[in-house]
Image (cartoon, rainbow, N blue to C red; front, side, top):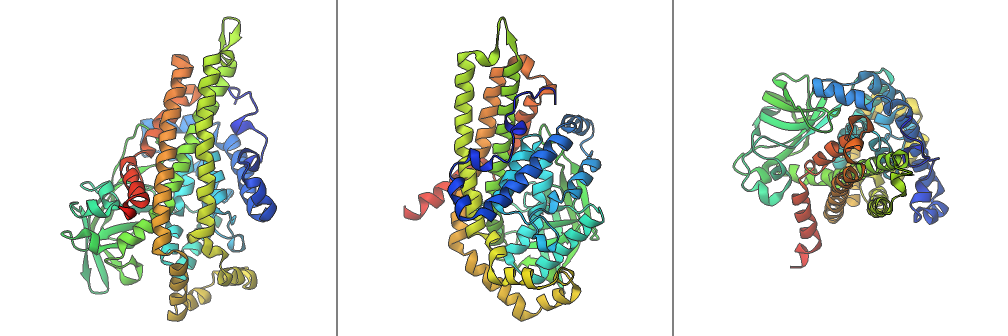
Length: 482
C-alpha cells in the first residue's frame, strides 16, 4: 500500500458513485433507496479490496503461475463471510439484496485491484441467472437455499457455465456459425432424462464447480435446432475434470476442461428442452456480456490509477514524471475514454434493473412474498414443494415471458455486445498506453501494471470474441432494417 499515496481511485473517499457519474444525481432524488443500495455496496467492496485483496493479489498471481490449480481458500472464506458471493440474493432471504447498478460498483471496485478475484465473486451468479431466465420458482428457491446454506456453513459452492467446446468456441453462441459447427458434446434421450457425452473446454470455475450449467445439443447434425440446457452436479457418475489451463492472465480464476462420459441428467434438471437451449443461452448472454465489459472497465481503471500513482512519485531530474505535459495529455486522454465507457456501463446496469430479469425481484408477487412470508418459511421445504405445483410454476414462467420478451433479449444482446467490446477494448488500449508512459521501471511486477495487461487480453475473447460481438451489434442495429 506504500505505493498508493494519492487519494484517488481505490484510495478516494467514498462513496463517490454519484459524484463521478453526474447523471445519477437526479436519479438519486427520484429513487434514493435504489442509488443508496449501490453506494453501500461500493463502500463495502472498496473497503474489502483495500484490506483483503490489495496485500495479497500479486502473491496469489505468483502461486498460480507455479501451480495453475492453486486457489486461495483463505481469501474465499473472507469473501464468503462478507456475503459478496451471494450479494444479489434478497436481504429478506439472507443475501445483500444489491441491484445491478450495485453489481457494477462491486465489479469495478474489486477489478480495480484484482480482476480474477472479481470473476470468482461475480461469475457465481451463473446459476441464479440461468434459473431466472426460465423462472421456475421451485428451481429458483432451491438454488437460493443451497447458496445460503453453503455461505452459512462456509462450504465451498461454485457454479460453472459450460458453452465452449474444443471444436466450437464462439460458434456455440452464434446462430449462423452453429449451422456449420462440429459439436464435441451431445445429449442422448433415454428413459427419464438424457445421457451426456463429450467435452467442454475453457470453462471458468470448471475445476471448482459443484454444479455445471451446460448447453449441449441432442442432434450433432443440427445443433441450433436441438440445443438444450442441463444442470449437472459435478458429483455425477461419468463427470470428470480434465486439464486445468495454465494461462498468461487471470490466473486466480481457474479455467478447466470438463469431460462427460455417459452422465445421466434427469428430466427435472433439463432447464431448457431441445430447441430452446440457444434462446436460453442468448438470454443469459444478454446480461453477462455487458458485465464482462464492466470487468474490462475495472481493469482499465486499475491500470490508470497505478500509472497515476507511479507518475506522481517518479522523479526525473528536478521534477516528477506527472509534471510533464505529454504525460498529463496522455493520462487525460485515457481518463476521458474511461469516463465515457463508465457512463455507458451505468446506463446498461440501470437498464438491466428496469427492463431485464432483475426486474422480477421488483414484481408485485415477489415483493409481497418477501414482505409477508417470514424468513424461516421463505426457503422451507413446504414452500418449495408448493412452488413445484403446475399453477405456481406456470405463473412464474408466464411472468418471466412478459418481462423478458424476445424483443428485450434482442435489445440487450445488442447493448451488451456493444458494452462488452467497448469495455474490453478499453482495457487493452489503456493498459498498452500506460506501459508506454511508465516505461521499463513501471513494468516491474511489483507495480501490478503488467498484470493488468495480462488480465485484459482474455476479456476480449470470452463471452464471444469481440469480433463476434461486433457482428451481433451490427445485426441488432442495422441488420433488421437491411
